[in-house]
Length: 503
Ligand code: HEC
Image (cartoon, rainbow, N blue to C red; front, side, top):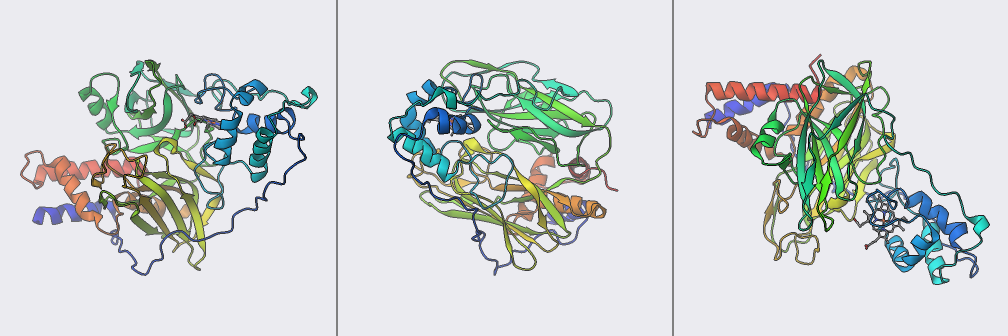
């Protein structure tokens, strides 16, 4: 117990903040306030035969479907011509009516996001009527030009090109594969990265990818211990990254980091790409590339992330609405620029709201039908103001019943926190900037602290347990002087790597 206390005070000292174990406010309202949704009038039917492919449908399909439904992209067939769409007209009507396509998980009205892919009622109605009326082609004069797509690097030639050192062979059949690949970043000094672009080598098999930094050599060790290129990993990485560089999902456009910001990459860092593969029925080979774009100047604005999360989960088999919550209150005026929720297969409903000091509820995101396969990073169209004293709450709901088709265990079994397919997670990263740059250090502290907090105040014990497990080399259940010194050094490096050197 004494060593536990000492570890605790050591962590406290490292984080340099007194009140970092957050007490939950029992009176706190559950997340999920109603907000006004932007007007989307219902479809007004057109005269019979007035809706044709060339006139109304082609523009909708070119703008909303073709980016993925074309050769070399992620979707299984092209939607580029009358024939392509007519062949599947009934299916197209169905997937658009049910809003399965285009894939977009965030509910409208709960966060205003860049590149939102959502058809209006009018567009959906036009598609339904077109199919009901017999899918007429229409007048060739009405046909718009074929959509144009920029080939190659969307942000232009990168300053540094990183490529998986060898190709990875994805099995033909079976379960999805989740694997991390480690690429050393050949820089001789610390660099600032202002944009990152990921390019899969083979879009047929890559479902999504997340990019991380590791300046502590942890991922290399895991790579060496696992035969074949990279190492296996599912929802978690199996190590704590020292930074993140965003992610890629089909249809997502790379975009530079917010104006004035950049991410420091420490000399000696490795890039770790976690890729989710969907076997296609035949063996596929994948060799991803990542382009880094450097900023010549040090960032003028600080970018950090508040981590809301909980490991306190114990979901009984059959429980169809198990809730996990976490919250944090801002200590300075901040602006949210993006949000990345993360859970595994059982999560159903994901909500994150901010309650401003005056009581106004500002929704940050709501995903009603979470799908592990379509997770992404959501960027706000305009920064969302989070004044000092704003309470940010997340609430994740899980369905561990047999009725959930995504349940990986049949029959359902008890599920707790963990990194495997059959475990669960609950994390929401809110990417933030200080409203005033003079608060940069306070923002870094809040970001660093939130990484270790979470879980309705119960996580201190987990953190200490983890620290002991990681550094207790002689296995006596506590940390001796030498082991503590290593732990201290590790946490210091990790915090510095995450938040930059202290000013
Ligand atoms: C972001 C990429 C993306 C966009 C945009 C997109 N699709 Fe898809 N579509 C896919 C992928 C990938 C699949 C394969 C199934 C899956 O992985 O969910 C698919 C599957 C489909 C299917 C087959 C569904 C099934 O059950 O097999 C239809 C039909 C379809 N899309 C129509 C559309 C239409 C119509 C649009 C535009 C309104 C569209 N898609 C936009 C990626 C996309």
